[in-house]
Image (cartoon, rainbow, N blue to C red; front, side, top):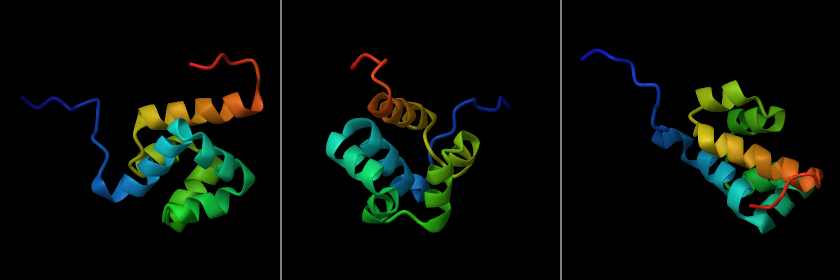
Length: 91
């Protein structure tokens, strides 16, 4: 069987990036720190320059290329939008 999988497991090298995305999705205190000072919040989790640049630009394709989990990219983005727009219902 030579099928290409549509899902790629995140590499271990993307752990910090995915940890940051998970924190943005799940941790209100971290999300508040990120919104107040994104650079410091990313440093707090030990993100490298390339990961920080991809997050600052919120470039979905670049984040995925760096090993970010697609679900975390989507959910972290949604949570950040929820902080700015009161149109979203909390879930």
